Length: 477
Image (cartoon, rainbow, N blue to C red; front, side):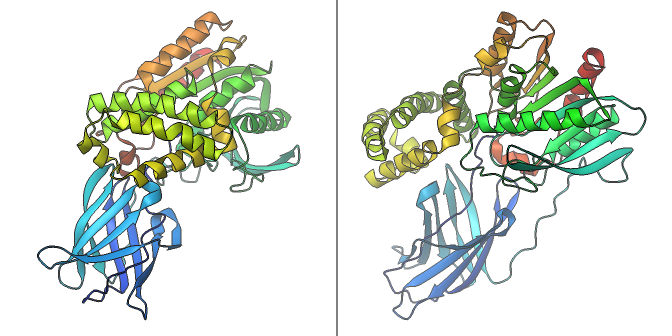
């Protein structure tokens, strides 16, 4: 479950009702220093009537040619010319002062304020990204691209097989939330490639698979839920059992984030899953997990503890009001008063940091939440409780790990939830462990924010890999 990371620039302003003396037309570029270096490119065009239109690119996020909503040109009290962009959908804003016809110096805002200069002309080169843990051939094992079908869908993946031996224990890797490729690629990190490499070197067959609608897998990801993804894992289990290199009496699942929610769904309904590794998996009701996640992210963004706790309370009120409404109009009418009543108790400075400045901001925020909550995946996900599945596990050995610095699946909340469910259930061999200093991706973190994921060279901390392989050697082989 990878939490929805900060999304940079999907739409910018595109109408200017004030003719300015300077000509802002042309290409402007900047490098935003969050979640790694992210290049932003703005193409501004002066129209015959004196207004401006613009399109926006974020090449490092593969967002090209996005039509902008509005461009506002104005002058401050000293006569300096200002260019303002606003991304209403994501509560992003930017205002820059024209310094010398080639530089806009200003501030980019999304939760926090970040100094940012746009320069007219040359696009900066792609940032150098170092990912030293990403496996590179030649490998001391077989690596095979595979395609298989089940229930009208095609699945594409990679299976890695140790060189020496005939029948091996096997593991399926299950990705987190959001449409992921087989390597669970994020910010050029390939966590599942690193995991598959370590596990195959340790004597396991490993299957990692593209999610629906990406890579070599078919299907409509947007219309799917976690229950559908559980069906995909079942299809992969059936395929893995058909492989002659696999010991079909010793197959397990490894799920990260939402994948750690799906693994117990599958394992509790089958008798052929013998072991399971849960990485940053939910252990409590998802509505509670998401409320805590939002509070933790607010704290990591610099909001004070009191505000973060209040925001958690708001989330737990807003989401049920939205998902239980009969339609989007009712959802808006239900949720808007809740937001307004909550704001009455909050410091105005804190509200402005989040972009709540006008009544229109309130309506826009609620509409964004309604759009998210209206997807089939979210409706299923937000109402999910992992505990019944964990308690139903029979004779499945379990290792559950969480980083102490995880702000997406908070360790102090979810590990006790997993522990409690396993104690009440029928599984007798399990270990629940917190790994100090690691984030949601099991990286050794410094600031431990979501934005830091892409800045770190480490893909998975060696201590996490060692903990997994040691447990497997002691409990599975």
